[in-house]
Length: 209
Image 1 (cartoon, rainbow, N blue to C red):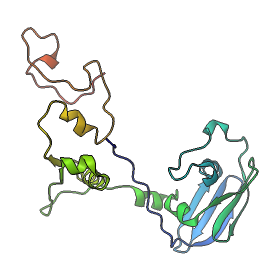
Image 2 (image 1 turned 30 degrees about the vertical axis):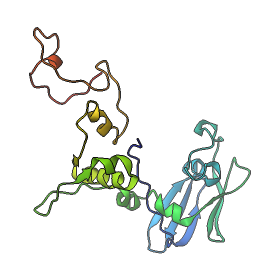
Image 3 (image 1 turned 180 degrees about the vertical axis):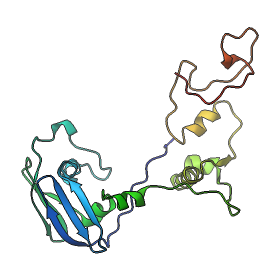
Image 4 (image 1 turned 120 degrees about the vertical axis):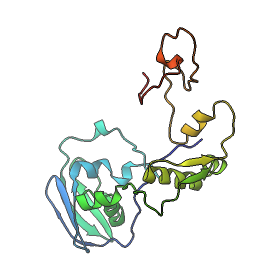
């Protein structure tokens, strides 16, 4: 079952560059809306599009193999692409302005990408999902997980009443780490228990080893 994935920022194809400037260790882009975004040379080298697999964006290199002395020797807007000559590489790096805007590192851009919790008020509607849809459909799962992320909780209806379903629901969020209690522990109160886990006493929030 696919698990929750981080949602990449939206790519705005209308992003326009007003000017470029650079030092050896940083590229600075001034955008048409007045925003100014810095891009460190090492970050640009690490994110070179020609060193990433398409379409998943995975690295085709080990970060430890980046050359020493990475520095920006030149930067220009060429045919609608930001072309950067980086010391240590044989060919220039070429970035889409839209991609650079989507992943801009200035405080305002980072703040825009950060999700904010939605406070509850009189208009609040309990985030509810159907298990069959959430477990089997990417769009339904993303919608419900986004609601849980924004509101802090959610209700999942239609979960089969079968052993082990707790784990299957949790796997919608991510991997379940196995501990010395296993992946799923059923609380059973026994006489002369050697551990609070085997009693009916309350246990506060905690993380198993």
